Every structure is written in C-alpha cells, then in structure tokens.
Length: 112
Length: 112
Image (cartoon, rainbow over the protein chains, first blue to last red):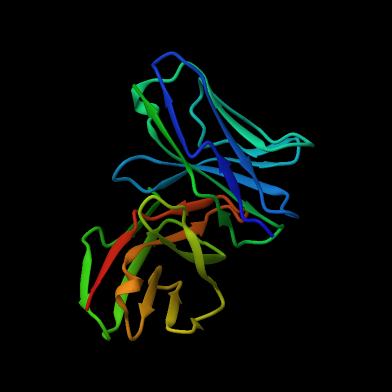
C-alpha cells in the first residue's frame, strides 16, 4: 500500500503565477488535510476535505487559495497569483475515519 | 487565547539516556493528543496517540503521558540512540474533526 503521494516535490514559481499542488491519499482513505509549514515555524492547518466536500477551511487565506478533492483523482491545492510570502512547505495528510494521520513528503514551493 | 507550546530550545542528550519532551496547552479540551516525528525535508510521521482517559501509553522505547488537569503531555524516549535525533511535534484535535493543531516542535539531538 503506497503512502500519501505529493507532487511535485519542488515547485518554483515567479510572483503572479499559479501554483498547483497535488496529493494522492493512501488507498482507502477518504479524509485529506492540507498543512503549511513556513521556515522556522510549525505546521499550520489549512483545510480538511472529504470526497467532493470541504469540511473545514478555517485555515485557508481568504483570497488566492482554493482546494478541492474530486470524486476521481487527487486533491489539489491551488494558489493563484503567488507572492513571496507563499514560499513554504505544503504537506498533505490523509486518514481513514479515525484519528491517526499519514503525511506525504511535502511540496516545497519557492516564489521568486 | 488558545495555545499549544513545546520547548523551543533544542534538547541535547547523551546516547543511552532518557529524553523527555514537554507539550503544554491552554484553552483546549482535546479528546486526544498525538506525537509525530519530523526529519529535515520530510513529512511528519505518526508515533503515538493518547486519549483523555488514558494516563500513559507505551510503544517500544517510547512513552507518552497525558495529564488533563495540568494540560500537559510528556513524551519520553528511553535508551536514546543517535537515530532518534529529529524534531518531535505534539498535536491536538481541537474540534474532534481530525483538524490538528501542532506545537512548534522540539529538536532532539542524541550524541554518541
């Protein structure tokens, strides 16, 4: 059973471009969480999704950020018009309907 | 305000000794608390979960305690090894939805 997969592992964007981060949860997991880790800071919750539903997006910035988890395919975290402050590691985690979360390796976004 | 705090200073210990890491929280009433390990450039890896009605939990060389009166969890690694060197994160679920709130993490360095 493959673990949580994220791609790309590293993403470089110029200011104003769009960043798309993908997360494939572990097989059988229906819950996906996105977290952001800024340099020298802890992990911060962004959004919690189940298939086709956003359950909790209280950690998402109000503008430019969106997330989806379609019926088929990976979960996508989309950042429009990126700014330098968006540079961070973005982690996806998945879980079955339980408590333990399995994290992916992360996508490191660098905005030039 | 709600806070979850871990020792921000790195913990340096000698191989073979017991490492003790602290996690304190305020203005939360979590049903459970989790501990994760994170190595540089990698996603967090789940270690242990302890529920509010459990005082102590063990897994091999790891032991976690949970004191809901003190609002504190202690994480112990006995007979520590250099391979235990990593950042250890505590996390709690504030809303019982799986949305995790993480502490800043404590970096442990075990010297041979």
